[in-house]
Length: 508
Ligand code: BG6
Image (cartoon, rainbow, N blue to C red):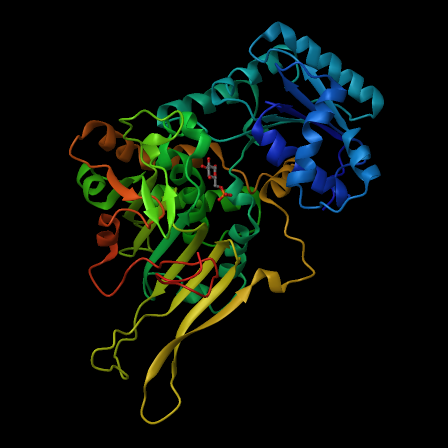
């Protein structure tokens, strides 16, 4: 749906990587599809000494490299570039925001945006509670002459206390309905499709509970290492970087009750209830059911990989986790007793995010064969890459007797050849322009997610007996993570690049 309200997108942190690689290219993709309002502009804000022309020169190569709609005409690129402005100011200095007021007036003069301003905090997190106050000091937060909305990037807080403090601060100058806490996982088409898979199909939802499901796995693996982000990553770690936000939101979609309507608050209420139903982690549960790991230098499949402690910006004795695996429970009517398993890490064999629903076995094994381990039915929802859905079930092998074999039935998004799949940032920026906060995290849910992970952070900080397991870079993480699941024939699924494959020797 096209955004109809004229508006200005004001990006703080305009000279940063996020702006270059994601925000401006996504806006360009919206532009190419005619989804931006007729009157629209971007004002980049930052300390670096650009003007409108040099800012355009800086960011346009990013459009050519990272936008989806690459095959564009030169005049299209030029038309898009003319929508970009720059305002140089020191974001931490309140007095300088007068320059932003003036710039916005100038932009308004070029095209009447009606005072509708969408602010985007793509700055270092310490500015998240400063910029909004300086905007307020200049009246730039006030609705009345047009709407004002504020998108806040992750990380939202460093722990529960700082997340609460940030929420309190933001609410002093913006109302909750003006705040858009971004979690780009919620912008992924395949994450949203979880709602459709579950609630638009009569065949799945009746089985989606403790009566039919044995356990659920959520894996988000990355083959990349920390690379040159060591400085940031070492004070974050996988739990803060991936689990508290992206994976908890994904869990919310997998485990929530049906909302009464598809509307922001109805959906966000259900997600919050999932977080509130998580069984609190005791110190014993942290020690037994949460595994942390760190990748070590290795030579795997003929390739040499650096260890985490050799990365730029990482101390030689760092204990920061680059891998987390955990087992946990949701204590509610639907999920009572069903174990959930979650794992994420850097420098794993392949990049894959997926949800694996393991169904219970049939009550009686009519076709059991000596020495053959029967596998339960699985529904695999692939978030990325090779997006799709795979069902694993048994068939009879042709021939005498009843020899069974597990086979695949799969759907791949790429089969929808006429459908364009927007990037997560594209979708979320458009939603914010439309005033739709459904796919943004609400303050109470962010706090509930922090509340849940706090015992892990505390345990890791205070209990020296909880090890950081080393794992060779390029492998599936510490062996102790296997023991979290393995009291039966079950193991983690070891996914491959292609949705339908798994196992040790597949294409990674
Ligand atoms: C970011 C994390 O939020 O998400 C990164 O900071 C991580 O460390 C990235 O690589 C993963 O996102 P995606 O969309 O590539 O799965």
